Image 1: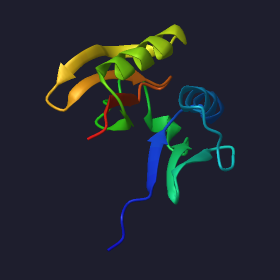
Image 2: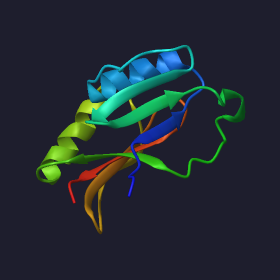
Image 3: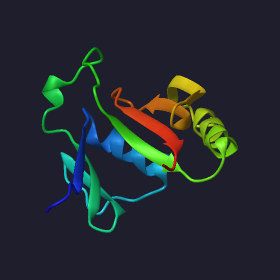
Length: 121
């Protein structure tokens, strides 16, 4: 059975979003086009920025999904990443706290898309 291998994040400014995700995750895009920029996050798995629907995004558009980054190590590793990202000026919407799945925090990209950091399951 096929498994999902492409995850799209809708953005209004693909160049700004590319710089943000490249800097945040320390990765480079597979390719760049004026409205679509994919990053290979695992062999055969892409996280892609797409501005093809930028006209439908706004600051008050509800965000109902999250990009997730699972971090190996202890709660201290998650707190350290939070401190690193906060020092870069990333917008934090949930400070580090404990949930049923472990230590977590949430930031946003420039368009308000949510990025959750949590421990490896």
